[in-house]
Image (cartoon, rainbow, N blue to C red; front, side, top):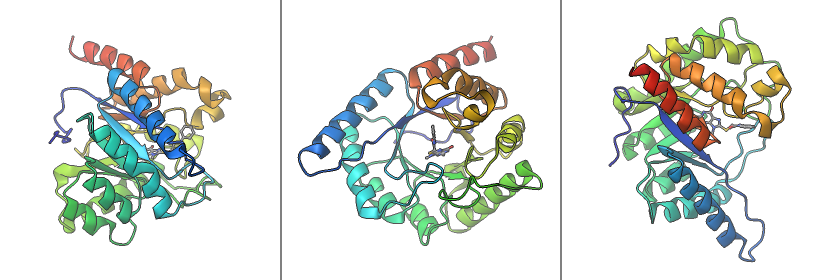
Amino acid sequence: MTDLDLRSTKRPWVMGILNITPDSFADGGKFLSVENALTQARQMIADGADIIDIGGESTRPGAEAVNSDEELDRVIPIIEAIRNESTIPISIDTSKPSVMQAAAEAGVNLINDVNALRADGAVELAAKLKLPVCLMHMKGEPRTMQTKPHYENVVQEVLDFLLQRVDVCTSAGIDGSRIWLDPGFGFGKSLAHNLQLLKHLHRFVATDFPVLVGVSRKSMFKMLLDLEVQDRLPASLSAEVFALTQGAHVLRVHDVRATVEAVKVFQAIQEA
Ligand code: 8Y4
């Protein structure tokens, strides 16, 4: 299996976000959505993605929860289709143990949980599956998290939360070498909170766990620059390259090709 222990990796990784279009009717729509996802996945692989993140639940601010049958129907056929033709590492973006289990059986390599395995049974299941996990910080829940988030010290509070989750995970038998951390940009954070977390990202890197950064096209760039989502690539790349200088290990992005180019330039400078 691919080695996802990034603590001594030679270069940062690019995680490509696979957009899943929900299939609405039983009229062949499912086939089309799998074909569409496969086309996107092939392009991301060609563009140099190191791992593909697949999620069937909208975690956008204000989003409603999706039931697990719906989520399984969306993601499992896509994981199977990619696995059928590629060994690229795949992460499953889910908070639900039932989805983690089925995704593991379909061959995923990482659990990417924006809820940091806080669902009933999630920590125990991840330990049993022996899959690496990305633990992300979120304050509140997606439906309400962006209404006036407050912290005394955002960097310390996010770091403390993540290290508490690390304790819970390692106590349940998840090996420390299988844990990644993520401050959770945009998940219960104001613009000022997101900027503080980026500025002090080295504090997360100093834990010695691989650090994943997900800022691609996020609304912090709407707040900062008043840009629409399709115009946020240069801003995203600026924040991402800053994160690399702080020691970030993985960038979760929509624009794989441009990000891979930025990472290569960064890496060439590092190695000069
Ligand atoms: C435009 C672009 C509008 C992006 C909204 C969004 C993260 C994550 C998400 C993250 C990890 C998103 C699943 C939110 N963000 N997983 N997932 N870290 N580990 N919103 O930052 O991309 S979904």
